[in-house]
Length: 630
Image (cartoon, rainbow, N blue to C red; front, side, top):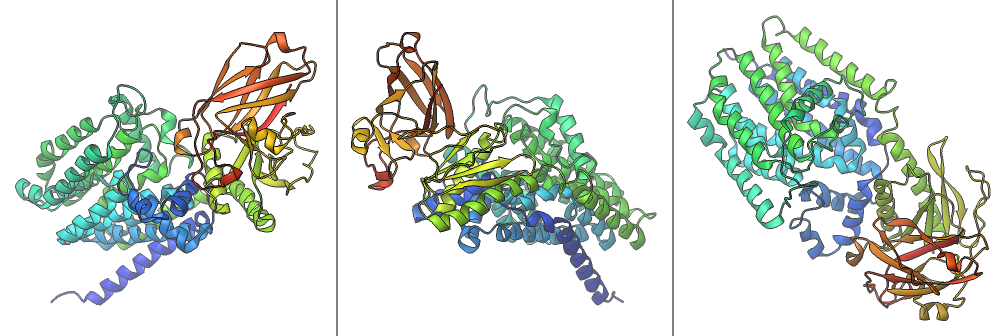
């Protein structure tokens, strides 16, 4: 007489609902954060670069940075932008819903493999409740890992239920989400060989379509999209086996929540190189799969075989991390290894002493409590200077900025004043892209300085004690707040931005200085620009603040050659960041003069794509934000 399926179905639904409810309680606070860092870059691409069919298709035919993730980056942000716009809640809710779907399918896979719903609950709880997911919900750009993990586990589900076509299709989706899904064929092979105890040849045959997809993917990546190799640098080909042990050990501690939430494996040192040894990894995979697989498959104890399978899943899941991003990865990269770790732990609940409902419920509750403490407790994710506080700082800037831009509608130069430690490349990139998305202009400008600019339309000052930006000036010609945290008064500058001559717009253009829209604002410089400066008697240097537009000719930065009239000395400065402050020494023979004439020669220039953009259709180069002679 067969068992009544209704109680089993009800139990399954209750467990799935409990997993979703628990994960929602843990990560709801993460879903309420704002955008930060790379989020703005992808929104910029969604709004401007993917506005045409050619730009949309480009997402599938080019590598973005070091990765190829068209579905989880470009398409995700394109879709989210057109649905949610500049509202971060929608983006984060999609991340959370995807995590919940992955948790449900993890439980279904564990149930199918273990044939024990209570043991499956333990493994699924380890995955669903892990505090490692905090970042993947709080940061929309981490959707790459969440989506790849979800597609990965769905593919495994269809594999174990013998729906091979669906399994293969979901594996393709997983690879288009993130490279970390690449070990799936090895996991499928071991599942057949070790757990299901299929013959070696049959295990190879069953997983062969997945191996073929991986081979095609690798071939297309290398031959058409390209993976740059070199003897040194971020793409160097070398492996340091000595670091793999500590990385794996720390990953295990992260999986069970024993390390502080902000502990990043990169702190221990890593393999120098993003794609450091692809061939080595493939060799290790082959050794694991075809060398020791037959030995493992001979074990008779089901719990023992499931534990070994979970360990192999965990190790194979780590391989893309160890090889591709061993020197730069975070906890949100642990999604796929977490599934293997959950399988390994749940195998213990197949033993007679733990194969009870009570033991499984206690374990699941304990897992929830530990992770809740890791998120909400002292020093937890919601307390430390991590994603939440970074998002708060960013939101304080954009909330004010959005209101002011709606009110004035003519903001041209936006000045963000922050200490040097906040003005790093990641923050600068994030804010610059975000300003353009918010303003609707692909060329809106923002200047980063450690002191306020008098001629900026808006000035936002970093409040160190509060950890947020506050608006201290709004709209053209209003005075900058004189009381700043350093206690200094911002210096005043003459048109345009510290330049004594030329004085009129016509004279300025003749000298290669192009005002953005009107006088008293930042200006673009031609390939050769000549400007006059008034010099205090004691001045020994000229400090210039430049902004490099994000256009193809200047993506590698700009080379500026500066000379002073009356001196043959040529001073060269390379501007590699979007906003840079450069010091030029005044030649000793000219320091007695009250007026100086300075000529700047640029290494590259461009013609604006839009006729009349910024009031200039000639060849232009960098933007000059201000000049100080000190």
